[in-house]
Image (cartoon, rainbow, N blue to C red; front, side, top):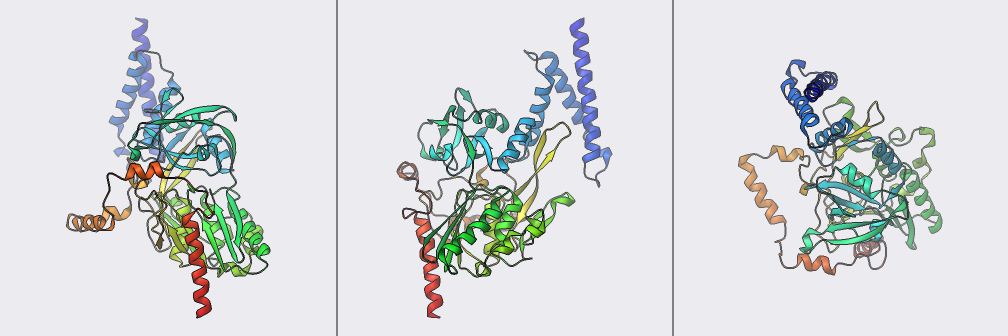
Length: 470
């Protein structure tokens, strides 16, 4: 009898929860939507399932766990980048954008139920251990990742600096068995901007991530390069390879260093009014106090300095915004390989209880109206890095957001599009992909062994020679 009463009370709780959810939906739904059209019957099914689990599951399940998993599933089913952030993960996310956090140092997503490496952050334990963009993490210590939420996997990867974790990796293109690497966690203090004078008159500027201080650090680095050279530069390389992105205002700031004030950097389109933005190169879009506009302190010559931007498969999101803006304004030559193609906006929406959701709310578009989503930025000059065609991109992710151009394909033109794509892509070689990965040796960016870097420098020198001839 007690069990029956308990069961009925739990089901009643589930129904009550469902009604509360429906009330919340009516508050946050599209203002133009008719509240009568809310899926009340589906919400009742949700409440019924909740009650059945509480009453009949083989083990007692905590209410909070059930609700959290429901939220994880609801957001995770939308696209690979939307997720629920509990209080701990919300705090960790805030620390990460500030440039300091504990863990392995990788930007990750989900694919086929596994954790996918989007890009290792330079000079972190994961980077030094040899993890690459496209790797699938299938086990953490003795725990299988399959079936975990991304938040749960991240929680395991993060830990006390100095502690180690065994990471089992599947490099699927290699066609070999999974391998395990032991990685020692560290306090990640990511230095997002590095610079050096390559040789007289030529500078190198590398941005590894877009953080709160990235724009200001880029400005300081440019000023330092000009001071060291003691005269205007003949060329500058901006290296955005393996940069997984970060803060949007930092991307606007970096773009503003090279294009005239007021020019469009990026615009976004979404359903909510506040998701429609046109971000231009003005201080209000990248500094809290316009009086502290560090871009104004840059040498005037930087606006005319020949510029090459390096991108690759690991260049994502904010990196693609910068590359796309500079390409559309014909301010720089983009060199390297096609970028990752993450052209969606994730808004962090705090909840009342200290949690938050990271929700995809819009798509990014370059100044000329190109959608980055699942397309990426095509280089003006392709310089291979030895992994072209072997590493996956946003377009390969399960359940990824579509590109608006894909929705315009009709039965009449789809065959032509397929033929063009087939003609544009080199024929796949089934026998050399694994060999290419086995023989691939990562090089330090910005060194003589870095083929893309040396080609970028040669391009800049060619531009200078052309200017002198003319």
